[in-house]
Length: 573
Image 1 (cartoon, rainbow, N blue to C red):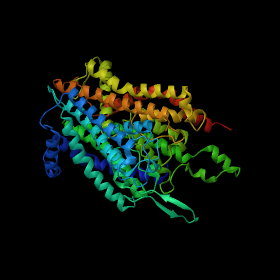
Image 2: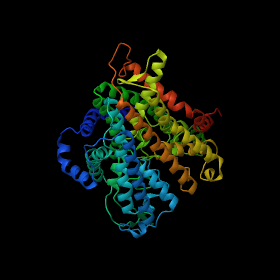
Image 3: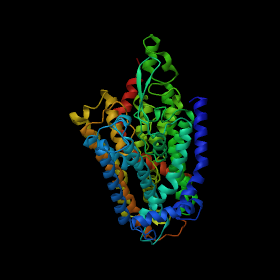
Image 4: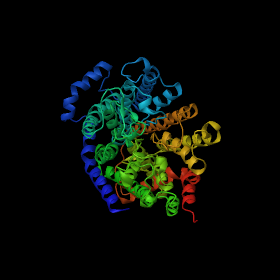
């Protein structure tokens, strides 16, 4: 790793760490309902929303009621997005007169955006009207992100409360997450992006003459507003097919840096929110440390692999049959305005979280460079993770970790003063194991049937990696893809939609069940036998649990894909 790469990573991580406490403290105050200028400024709007919707903000919900409200809310969102896609040709704000989407594509997209996956089997600028982009996709960017945040808050309340029958009010939580956190920050980021050249308009597409005297159609549209929330809410996707590699979405190094920071700022801040709400900020710092160590280690592998380049191309370069530029590192599939380090950092960030935004083609990464994004998703995206999903998934691993530690020392396991018993372990097992089950099952089916193999552009190990990446991305609600797979087919649209739905809501219900069970328990006083969960030992235990429990399931599949491909590329001539 060269000095420029280390400086970029050091500045980025330093600024991110500086933001953790103020962002986390602000979110804690929002969900605790503490008076402050944002809550005072938006109080009248918040009260009107409750009055119009018939919500009693003082009424608490048990975990079943909370889960039912969440599921119904997201089902209605999916229906709205589906309807917009199927009716857009007759609706306004469609200057290009785009046709209605096919039923299977509309179904896939609707599920994708309400699950915070934002997988796109279509080209946004040639398929979606402005109304569909704004009223459907952008709105769900806010609401799916808010859904993830409130599940995390519900689990934190379960750990913080004792002898309680409720874990909060879903409607209050989702309103506050949207009104006080996502909307103001997304608005600010959108204005900054516009100032840097990201476009925001309702104009029809423009035909221009290029310097080669050819005609090119330039897409227009409300891009900055969607770009800001897609990064902030770890949604991913993009108004344009080229995503954050397109200069209309990500024009320069500054916007690239800000977009990366936007992806991580809420997931990182929620670790401090967790510590604050349970009354011990050391707990939050311990979780953040575990996330940070995993992130830096995996980032180093990605940057090193991409800077090493491809030895096969380097050998060809000696024979004058390929460009010698590969000797400076693997620039294939990357934007020259970003370079290797910024592209590798973006790829690591976007797959450490549940954000499918990309500023480079992951399909063109080296085998090990492409393995890291794939591996991070298969960890359950707990290395910071998506907004809300990262912290609640890491807390599930913490519960499993203290259970294993308790068994090793012959003591009833407990976490933050709550006994971890059979029910919590059953629900934790469901939350952790459902993802590998659906990902590996979907991959196995896809490589076994003609409809699955037909979408693969590259044969052999890389083709297998493309399919495995697609289902890993869908099952972990990421949304990025290896570009070599053609997924806009009835088979992949339906299979990936089902994977996205189960990968999102099956674990959420299990997490809410754990929250309800923990909230009802009495708090156990700290004793000499209590295992500290804020020190170095616990951080090591947590990292080990993530790697052993969360990752070993995928080792055979990884061996068939990127590991084999790496050995082929680096074999001795």
